[in-house]
Amino acid sequence: MGKYAGQKIRVATAEIRREGAYLLTQRLPSSSLPLLWEFPGGKVPDGRSAESVLRELLEERIGVRVEVGDLVMEVVHEYDHYTVDMQVYRCEVPVDQDLRSLRVHDVRWVAPHEFSQYTFPGADEATIAALLDLEPPPTDESIC
Image 1: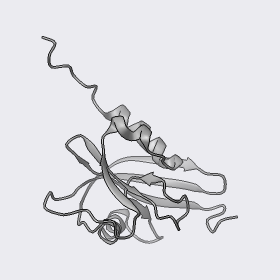
Image 2 (image 1 turned 180 degrees about the vertical axis):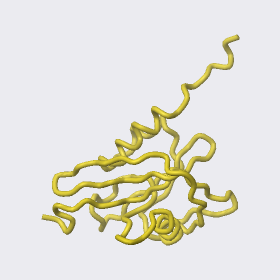
Image 3 (image 1 turned 60 degrees about the horizontal axis):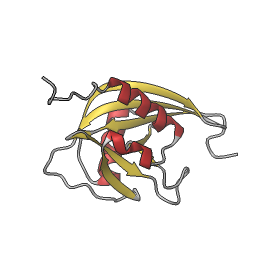
Image 4 (image 1 turned 120 degrees about the vertical axis):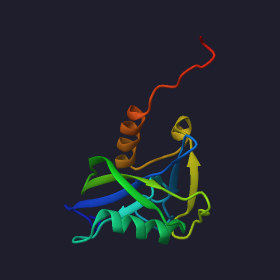
């Protein structure tokens, strides 16, 4: 059994959008669920606010200072031996800040139509499904 066996883990993640794409990070090869793609963020220790932990994690992992906005959604996902309670916050990254892979394997802007080319943990898959339902349908401006 893993180190989280039987636990409910609270996770804070960032929904960061720019020009129709979402910011995704790739987990380190040495992490649990290695090399899977996810919304940036991580585990929130007991007694800490999700927003402050999220700000710290994004600075440590991808070198950016974010403004944490509203809670967009909460997704609870049961893995085989533990449960993840994922809180997704809308965040902004100032355009003058460069993304760096400091404590992640990779970081990318990914358009929703490209998500099928990436492998995500279950909780992130549920988040993606919910986010895409929130997206307005594309409009064909050539039809008048």
